[in-house]
Image (tube, rainbow, N blue to C red; front, side, top):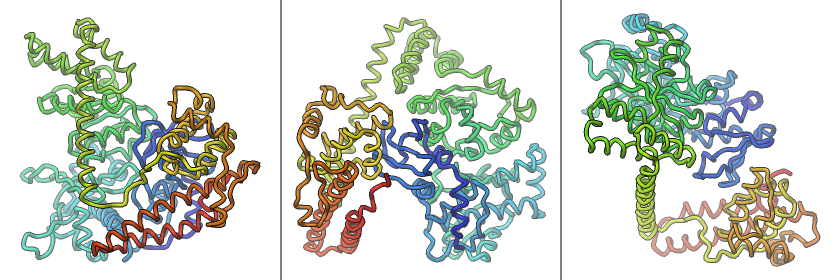
Length: 631
């Protein structure tokens, strides 16, 4: 792989806006000079993930992840540093030296991405240049697909041969095993070679939301070929339940409109986009999934479902509605006139009339359920009416926001002509049943995890036998309370929450981070009853009793110990070093115990010894204070 010049890296860094990049993965909200959102690297309900556009860095006060724009992309996309630079360079139109192949030391993922890029170029060039691609060119022309759309969506053609791609890729020094791993070729049953997966098909590349080729969809060009579409199999880089076709092209428009239109086919997306309806995606041949809805929730508040009016289409729409509601988004359903699909409708009537039709014919989920139940005759009997009412209540129960749920309950009461007081007990019972199922699932998972932990010894996260914080972290809590937001930002920008002892200490630190993010520092809350007696006692202790870490650190490790009358910044730096070293020592002790246990059992300890060595190296970094953020 070609070496990327430092000057090019700096050019990419200067042109790439970290807020725009992070916003592709996290719904950000401006707060002061920073932007905050839910961390993409760990599960949380309260935003602790911060982006500083001025410094071009990100930091999560919950899990401790942080860095610059390249490290963010590398972490979130599981890419190497050069791959993350190339991805961002494509985004900001910076030309980098051409790759001469993935290189011998490239990861399997990098090699697969390289193979997919090669295949995309091969198919796209083939559409324009190959003689037997004329049928593809005619098909696109008849469909009214423009050259701009062909180029934008990378549409291509797979030649009518058993090994056309394989031959070209092999000549370009791509390993057949990598091509197979990318889903581009299939091993012959006799084990003697491979053949192309896509043959004489119109090719639609499937892009990630940041523009990386993940796979392909191939449409038939001969009526007697089967199946109509061949899609890429699941690979190391392609999980169809998480990918939405067209999201790369649509995300900016979706974000600006806060609404996304969900269709079924590749050509639907291309035709709508070409007609000016750009906030449209397709679910890549699968029923809409939680992961796909989660991806859309970063950009939109509303999802408009275009569904087929047959029973399969209605069932799919109903299932999607519940998933959408569960993630706090607003679903609408629209059925096009008989005999029409999005592609045919927009080619006949144009984009503006399509958008007008959607506005005028969209139904909220209550209207959608009632109308289709009436058409199916399910409202003709008391039993049928009760079943429909139960379906609506079950959907309302999925809504996480209390106010939105209340609004829909009143709407259901009006539409069903049933007093809301009669519906409330049913809703409460439904929600209680759902919560019970969640608890049962969590309990079963916990039991499985406990069994696995008993059967398989492993290095796990630190779990305190005692929840008593050490003096160094008490000092840090004291300084953050006394010095305010600047100290909170500095300490929590250097230390993850997990370094604070589980219990009152970590809860105090968590609350300080919350107050910092909300720009509403209120020390009094720690001394009242609302935070609980443990935090109340700890807060009183650290503010009323002078805290000074043990002098043993000076004697044992030659570490400067914070003094009572010392400068606040120096005191905080010293306390951070001591707390970090304390956690390192805890981890080292656990590793030594595990090494001893494995040695006794005659098992390999190489990996554990390497971890121990890495910790010892990190200890020097800590002593030199290199882990502490600049003030």
